[in-house]
Image 1 (tube, rainbow, N blue to C red):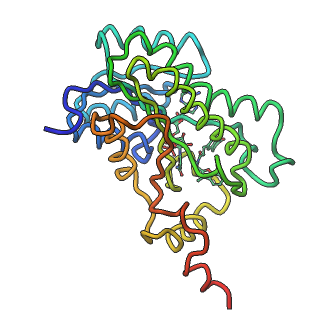
Image 2: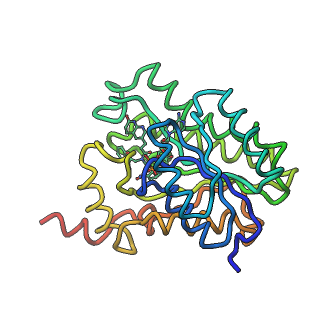
Amino acid sequence: MGILSGKKILITGIASERSISAGIADSMYEQGAELAFTYMNDKLKGRVEKVAARCGSDIVLPLDVASDEQIKDCFAELTKKWEKFDGFVHAIAFAPPGQLDGDYLDAVTREGFQISHDISSYSFAAMAKEARPYLNPKASLTTLSYLGAVAAISNYNVMGLAKASLEANVRYMANALGKEDIRVNAISAGPIRTLAASGISNFKKMLALFEMSAPLKRCVTIKEVGDLASVLASDLSASLTGQILYADNGFSISALPDATLDLVK
Ligand code: NAD
Ligand code: 0WE
C-alpha cells in the first residue's frame, strides 16, 4: 500500500514524457493514487493520454488556464467522474516569446508582464476557486516554482517576478484554505531539461554549473521532484502548509561551492 492509496488527484502541465508533471504522475501512481489529467490543447492531447494510460487513468480533460470558462468546465466534468477529490498539481508556466532572453529591462513589456503573471500565478488561485467546493478535507494543492523567484537569474527575467507572485499566492491560498483543512505548498525545483527549458540560452551550461555546484553533485530528475510531490499530497505532511520546498540537491543553500573556486586560477 502506497502513501497515496485512496487519494484522487488531478495533474496539469503534461506536455511531454519529460514534463515535471509526468514524473509527478508516475510517482503518485506508484504510491497508489487515482489520477486524472488535463491537456492544454489538442496538439498535446495524445501525449497526455499516453501518460494517463500508463497510470491506469482514462480521465483526460481539456484545460487552458487563460480561460475562466475552461477552468469551470474542467472541474464540472471532473466531478462527473469523481464526486469529491483530494487535490491537484499545478505545473503551468508561460511567458510570451522574447521575454526570457537578454537584459530584463529591455525584454519586459506591459503585455509580457501581464500574461506571465496571469498564466503562471493567477491560474493557481483561479483553479483553487473552482475546485474548492469539490475538495475533501486533508486535500493538498501543489505548484512548481523556481529559484528565480527569490534571486535574480540571467534571462529568467519576468518569469522570476511571476514565480515570486506564485510563491506569495501559496501563502495566501494556504491561509484561506486552512479552515477547510486544505494545504497548499510549492516545490522549487532545480533546472531540468523539459520543453519549457528548450530554447533557453545557455541551458546546457547552466546544467553543467548546477551539477558542479550543488552539494549532491548531480542534476535533479523529474522522478525526484515527483516523489517530493507525493509526500506533499499525502497525509505524511499533514502539518506542512504555505511552504516552498527546494527540490534542488542543495544548490540554493551553497554560496561559494569548491568547484566554482576551481574555475578561477
Ligand atoms: P513543460 O513544458 O513540460 O510544462 C509546462 C506546461 O505548462 C506545459 O504542459 C504547457 O502545456 C503548460 N501550459 C502553458 N500555458 C498553459 C495554459 N495557458 N493552460 C494550461 N497549461 C499551460 O515544462 P516543465 O519544466 O515540466 O514545467 C512545469 C512547471 O515546472 C512550470 O511551472 C515551470 O516553471 C516549473 N519549473 C520548471 C523547471 C525546469 O527547469 N524545467 C524548474 C523549476 C520549475
Ligand atoms: O519556469 C521555467 C520556464 C517557463 C517558461 C518557458 C518558456 C519557453 C518558451 C515560460 N514561458 C516560456 N515561453 C516560451 O515561449 N523554468 C524554470 C525553466 C527555465 O527557464 C529559464 C531558466 C530555467 C531553469 C530561463 C532562463 C534561465 C533559466
